[in-house]
Length: 202
Image 1: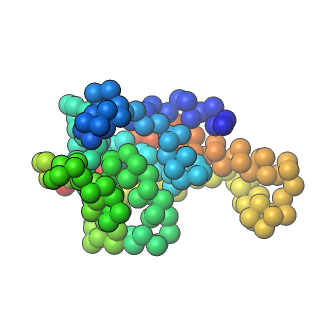
Image 2 (image 1 turned 90 degrees about the vertical axis):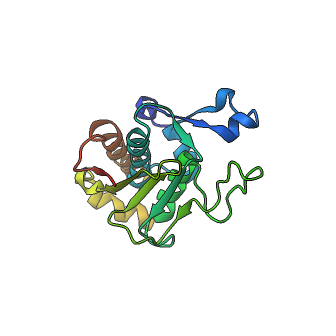
């Protein structure tokens, strides 16, 4: 499998997962998640997947400023319903990184390492997403604005042709290049700009 070259420039997210450590799945329970993992989960790379990745990155840095983030020790809440727009994609990526899951998540070993019922949709929030530590109840609120990094003007004419199946091979290739270039700009050139992603500690 070959990914766009810029994927390798995106810093990984390193977390500690006590369940992985207990079951011997990762040495010391330390796991690196890369943007490629989010792409494999979603099946594509787009501004939404990139935004969810950046939400996780900023939230973990704010909630765990002096230590590795604890995967499985986080609750994720989304304002949108799971069926609305791209909420399911965002939740999927956030769940991958944080370990938070809905009703179908891991039930735990005894009373430990429970991952189910840590992901909620349709919550009355003052932001798009809230991520909270279970041990301290510290929370961050996140709002993502992909329109801060607009698509190339050429996309306006290419998108309908690609979606309708009328585009030729050259147009499809150019569309894909421009699409991923926007993702690259989001992740590597504008990732820390408040206009793109706003985080507030609750």
